[in-house]
Length: 416
Image (cartoon, rainbow, N blue to C red; front, top):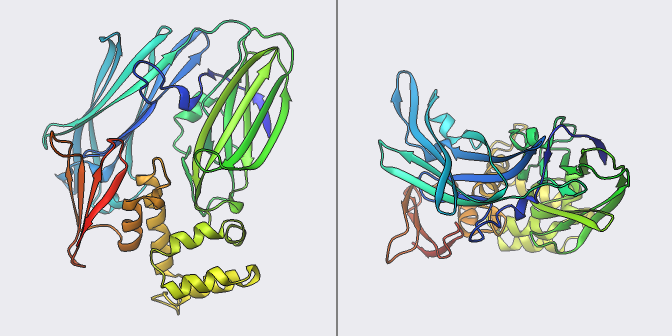
């Protein structure tokens, strides 16, 4: 664990920031075209309260048209701040994106990002974020909740918890907008750190006890690791970070909880991250999850053989499984295996919600069959929930998913 001085202090637990108004969330995903995600957290820059808003849109969700030697998309991003049904702030951002070709639209990392900071007085707010494409007529809107509380001397505040590569510098406010921050850790990453900032302005030089623990699952099923330490008081803010050993974690969501307490005051925060790390240690520690995702493409006999194998033989059987599917065994690369894990990463990045993306119905179909040839998205109607129809024309397959909850959790209801 590292401790250092922070430049800016964020406050309010990341997952608790959406308790304003009608219990709106602080993070939301609009699932019909154009699909996008938006999140808001409260910041404290010196003595000024600020709403930090981030909007992300995958390129493939936008309507690109031929423009010169490449492709371009035009759309509007609208951010409105509401209080007591009154608009008190807002901005329209006309955007134009240019890419060299369609290959850029298939890149999982290809996405538009807009970062907005709006100074606000303490209070309860509703943040509306909309993305509109006038040319295609597509438009989406989400509503987020924000609670900006007054800060008094002697209070203890804990920032949002962020995940990213270890060794990053700067304040938490800077890291919040850093593209290296992740919600998924992939197999090629060797290290992952949890970053936080503890604000305690005006607090006497009494130590603050900080406890953190790592647990499996979004709800925290069993503690994997826990530590505690004392942070000296007497300064406005303290930068914190903890290192996670990704090689020992696999194919699961993990929850980090932090509690800071002193002199009868306490602040809490928690956040989750999905981990995908193919390694020998991961096969030993989380073999059940590795087998579960393998059932999407493996024969029943192969899964049974792996399940019954003693730990020393698991790696050899695992490697043999992929060698049998290697389309170019004479080369160092195994394109089939690479494609499988690319699909797994995509499913986790695009379909995660209550469950990791690979455990959802859309994730399972995507991992097994790859990208559909066409997707027919039907928004919410008076007599029908949001629907997605995936067509695999080359395979003669069709899958129908519906979102019964309205929160992007699509369920497979038909196939043929």
